[in-house]
Length: 432
RNA sequence: GGGCGGAUACUCAAGUGGUCAACGAGGGCAGACUGUAAAUCUGCUGGCUUACGCCUACGGGGGUUCGAGUCCCUCUCCGCCCA
Image 1 (spheres, chains in turn orange, yellow):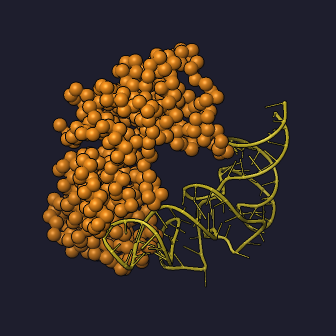
Image 2 (spheres, rainbow, N blue to C red):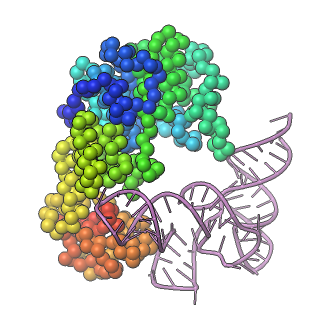
Image 3 (spheres, rainbow, N blue to C red):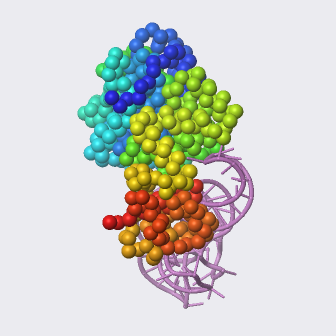
């Protein structure tokens, strides 16, 4: 059982979401009473445009988890069908279409992520569905007759997601992407019919699509359905959430190692940490409030950042990996690299960009070349700049001038660790 | 179908025959200060065995010229206006 042990929610769901800052809008004022009256089913959709998901996709997953903690039943909708189209919401340009096999493979691969956060057993077991299975068999004529009739083009064009694209000079919107809203609405209708699903969760940018689905259910089934949206994740400095020097932060180990994942959260700025704890962690209110107080009183200790990093790394990578990530960070930032044993060095190096060198190159391979070879820099030019500016280090010790690597630079296990700036590391392995 | 305008480095955006590897802004990287934070200040930001040198680049192709991002022809794509 790899699922992180989430505790049942003690508070009212909407109150909890509101307190966490996860509640952007709901489609009805009666939501609270509706949820209190029984076990409900909600879904959130995910685009299988990659074989993994990033921290940017995490909030909807967390929303489903909170939903489940409150005793309701979650459905993960994999957009195997809609992924073939591409959602225009929040996109400034037309997206490339993926081929069907790629989408199928991505759907399978992403399932692992959901299994870490959601409970697929028990009375409110989560289920996964793939809309390729019903959208794929729809006939064009049928859709136009049965579904399209209920959509007003005039209304669709006024939706923010579409209007934004209609008004830009550079980019238009294809009929394909224009139709996305109809398909997403149909998904909701389908889940309403087959799973008794009456609630859709999504980001604030999904509002228009969600409301369309609710309308469709009312028109065709005379049924009542609801929507809950969460705010989009922002950072206090206005930067893009989820990006680091090395690119997007993913939720699976093959794309982002547990070490980097842990570091990402550890580096959360003071201005963001309180909101991030509430958004991203499943810690209890009391714990969060204690951490927030600590962060305000003694920010230099970064207790809140550490707690968030540990919590999420354990959630997505497991407790063992989380421990490894922490000790790796400790070794790298304390600078005592020669004290590591061969196994630790190897573990560490396996996380880093790396290159190889031959023992015969001791004394001749320059630091600049070594940096290029370990791919920590894109060119020798860049390596030179880095060294000149005092930003390069061998095994954590600053090197002011280019020099050849020598045999004593090797750490146990035959690895030389090269650092660029404060946080970027690479490994050069000794070939044997 | 007709008329007009546009395409420049990661992004936006200057440039209208030599002084252009290309102003400026944003972003990114690095340094100082710090707490592996933010803010601020500074440097760098096409590549090469550091070279007032060479190579590659201003949508694609072809031309004019001693010399072209800059002029001409053509192709592709985009926008606006008229049908």
